[in-house]
Image 1: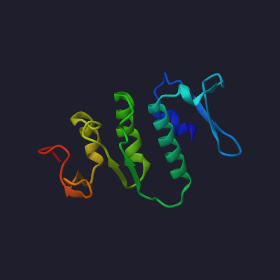
Image 2: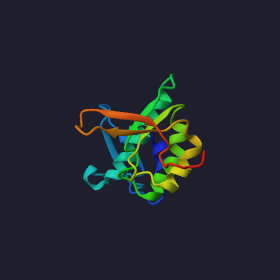
Image 3: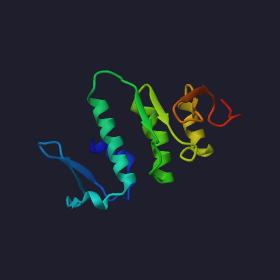
Image 4: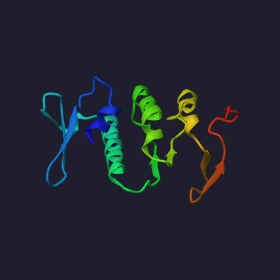
Length: 145
């Protein structure tokens, strides 16, 4: 778990590691081993912790199950987004389904991810809001394969 967390965090991160109690409650710790209160941890760092936890669980499984993530880059700064795109998503599972918004995945970050993309779909909500259409379409029309 902590190996994956360190792989996702930048070197100046507040969190050094996570420890778990016998009841599987987690505590964030700094490099000196002091507990960091959950309120002191940003939403982006909590998201990275959740992704590292998912990665660790995936390592424990015998099956290579698909992973689905909604808004995977929303709370993260550019550096962490690029690290996830280049180092995390391609290694997480054989099939990773990402549901980013167009504001999360700009053209530059899309091009980092593109070599790992097999198919792309655009989801649109109907006028009444009670249906979603799914159309195979490049995220950026005219993008080079």
